[in-house]
Amino acid sequence: MTATPIALGPNHTPLLEQAITGAGGELADPADARALIWNAGPEGFPERLPENIEWVQLFSAGVEEWFDTPVFDRHPNVLFTSAAGAFAGTVAEHALMLLLAGVRALPEHLAAHSWRRQELGRSIGTLRNATVAVVGAGGIGRELIALLAPLGSRVIAVNRSGTPIDLPGVVETLPAQRLPEVWSRTDHVVIAAPATPGTRHLLGKAELAQLKSHSWVVNIARGTLVDTDALVEALRAGTIGGAGLDVTDPEPLPEGHPLWDLPNALVTPHDSNPPQLRTVAFAEHVAENVSRFTKGRELIARIDVAAGY
Image (cartoon, one colour):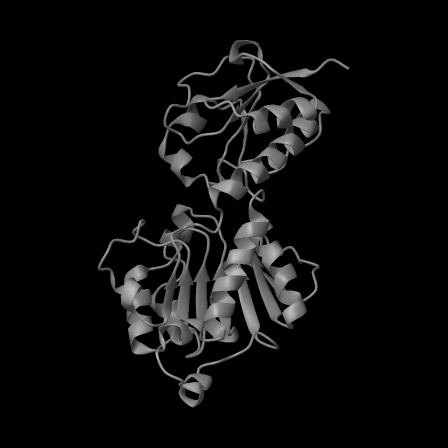
């Protein structure tokens, strides 16, 4: 079988080269290739692609920054795929860490300088028999659900269509349009939805007011999905138990921002998907899609330009 010509750019790395050739492709110049694996952001992306390019694989899972450019408009006949799902395992692991840390009062324990067993003990909760809403039950959400199941959590999964998610621990799957029903019914919330104009400030003042005083909010998607000012207000007032954030708005979170000093806020610097793990996971994703492309099968993580992700 003749190998399929695949271009790689703008950075050539042995791991990605091996992923392409090992999956039935051969490295080629864009002028001679049927596909382009692009391992960088929108800056520097070719203004025009050769007409022979049928498919472009992008490096990021979230592609909102690409919608700020004319890339998709310039190439309406090219199929674009993202890396959605490629990094799901490590990000879900980070989400569980933030949620457990909050529920088990880890920030308070780390801040303590004396043996405050009785006082701190009143802040400790459990995920066993707790209801956790996973908002955005795609690749990351499904991986998280699998991690929550052995802990005995009950999961309300929210996805775009409401198609039932048949995984242990899922007690209900709701479409995004029924999200307003979820806030008052859940103990904790994990946000893993894509960032689009329609999901901006998905969690705001009204939604936070419906959560419980012990509820922890974890965001591992994009900072814009949460109204930061409303979140700070809720954390200060004790409306919710706390927040675990790997993403913020603004980002990077500036020095002196209230979230750094609030005792019930746990902030990590968008490192749920660290570089040393990201490249390996992306190479595996590339290999799978190259293999599918060479065999004429449907590619994974196709970007829906109309939906915005």
